[in-house]
Length: 389
Ligand SMILES: Cc1ncc(COP(=O)(O)O)c(C=O)c1O
Image (cartoon, rainbow, N blue to C red; front, side, top):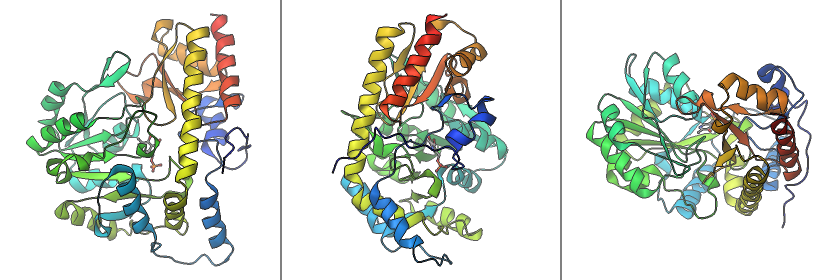
């Protein structure tokens, strides 16, 4: 079956953040929203079918985890990542940002240092800070158009940190960390007894030529010192179902974290959360493959369009996911002017690169999980504004 990713599906009026919150975020709704990380594609039919089946019952009482949920995860990570996990190592948690917040509370104290790698997904800063922790930074280096890790600096900061939040694959840089890099991070963190929270929410969406390696799968040293978070939410466009999970191999860490969640009943899944994930993993792989082919073509299209029409812009070519970091440093604009250029003049709603911390200035993040015609229109609008500069 071929899926149609060209179809434009109106999302306005569905309480969706991307469209319906644009006015409050950008001060106008007169723009093409290409910011928050969900896609404008219909999710796989198998997911809707699982939802429909449940909805039609018309009684939505208390539920437990769908019995097919853990087997589907076990199968998925074995099939896609050659990673063997067991049922007891998996637990439900309703969203990865909350899951990170719970882990920070569970495994560190007020005043502890939490290590992150900017420019990086912005809640990695505000979640620890809101919980009274300090954020230490190991800034990524941009080498030949790709982000890489400054291991010397990582070691220096790890020596003072309690937890390291790893974004793997990386958002917004789009890097898929290779086994050697993961191993080196694992060794440093083990040396200084720094717990690794590995956020792998984008892992199902690697682009051609790249494959994801779960941090915990690089060896015993990583497995013993790590909490992995994964979800079907990004890859199958079901973020609103608030369904994600942790995989923890180390028994002591697992018991501590599970107990933390259990005490506040945070390990209870809402009605639609687990059966839909099982459906996506069991029957949605073909959809995912086609969706990623479409996204890859969007990225190619965008890269070529920019090269031909706007030589002062370029992109950090992502190795995973549909988020593209646009390098606009050559425009030599102050950040507020740059945001104004893209949002107010070009009328394309994107994420301000500066929100991702150090190294994000001069960049904007564009979400290309949309029909090509929408991407084309956005690029035309940016070009029209660019030509007036
Ligand atoms: C790296 C990363 N982690 C977590 C999230 C959000 O996860 P959740 O919606 O499950 O809280 C995002 C969303 O963009 C993300 O990019």
